[in-house]
Amino acid sequence: MKIVDVNELAKALNLSVSSIYRKTEHGEIPYFKINDLVRFDEKQVVHYLKTGSLVNSEASYMDTNDVAAALNMSVITLYAWVREDKIPMFKMGGKLVIARDDFYNWIQSNAVNPVKKKKKGSKND
Image (cartoon, rainbow, N blue to C red; front, side, top):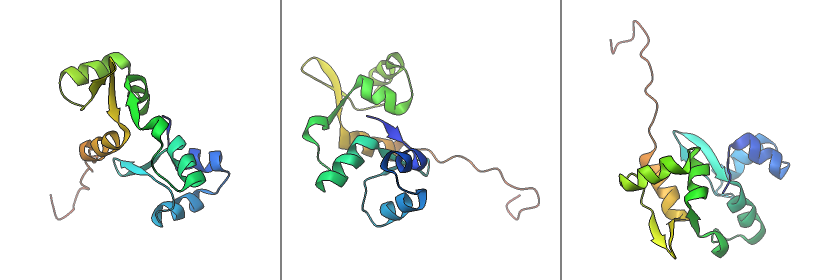
């Protein structure tokens, strides 16, 4: 799994950034948000554009390497998160995995919006 931003996806698909935003707004390509930033699973987008289907049976589960890469963390840290029940992974065939859809749902439900600093003199001071 390779999580990319709008600029990276535009370059990979040879489209403009505005075209990517337009396609996300019209539901033409799958995306998710992390802290209000639009992100894409590059393989899922390519699969969707080729087949029109979000389901890719070859990649319906993510293993620890996929999840750690997507979250930009070490596998060791990910194992700690699993032990602490911070992420819902389970064993299948002796490997820790998570269903791709569950991972996207988990990301969205655990995304934290950054706290915006108040400007001096605002009415909320």
